[in-house]
Image (cartoon, rainbow over the protein chains, first blue to last red):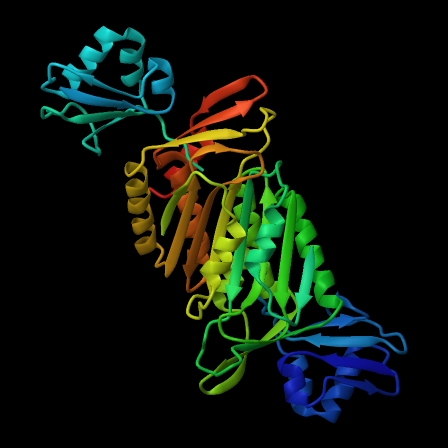
Length: 81
Length: 81
Length: 146
Length: 146
């Protein structure tokens, strides 16, 4: 399985902050496809420009393999201060 | 007469901060000449580049007429903060 | 020193502490971001962070700035959760030998916090809450340092 | 608000006061100049001003900055007389709607205070006291705003 974290407007959109997806997706793109099947609007939102992904707390670019039990966070555009 | 005020290194050089010069000089350049006759080193110092003059608390550029009783300050390069 | 806090803090008390006993740094620059009253009531905005990850990312930004601007010291305090109008959202303090480095580091850190630190911000206005993205100016300001 | 003082002051207390109750300004920038220990003993430097004239000149500089940078508010506190190592020499606080204006105004005011405000500064180093003139960098920094 993969543990998914959502932040900011993404968790408002989905109605949840943290959820596990099983069976374990082999790649980030497979996980995104699973999310999109479960919630089409959320699937589009996590693929929007400006949304970053972090796997096991490291920002990643492009697709990447996921270990079983990976923690994947989707980070919409950041705005502090 | 004219009342002369010195600041910063100028008063250290002259050994005084405030002094009156009489008879009343008609212009700033006449006052400078009187000061130079009394103290040649000070006369050179108040004429150095970067030294400003203020007459009756207004900064002046170049020569200017002085009323009797004028207050003339010589201001070496300013450095606050 | 990087600190996230859910509670209000006093930027002045931080500045007093930061200056105390400092005889080698001539220049202390600071920036305080205050929550403006946007007409949305008792809460001006809500700030979401990702505990641990947010501090680590800010730490990396701060360490790069410390080296780049030859800082002697720096402090970043950032609120999370609900912030009332008039409360401080963020404080950046920088200490350097001379003022140019202290100012530039403070300016740079704020630019990066605005658009590159993992916070998500909901503003409460008269029409209700809305998520805020960095403005075009925030993005071009941050790009000045790339 | 322009203030000259012969006594030590706490920049943090000034910042606390400056922020209090402010719900319309999003951005507060500040700069503190501290007296570095130059190895000259209990006095780091002596600052001479021309009472009345100095405040008036700083007031004119401040008023021009207020208009130029659309400041909501500003404070300048400047020491005169003998300053010990580690004490604050100068504090500038600026409040504006956004950070760029607050930062630039603070930076600008410091540049002008450094080379265009009527102060004369004697530094106490190991070789005794000496009068300090603005550095070449102070002059070019100030000229950025002309």
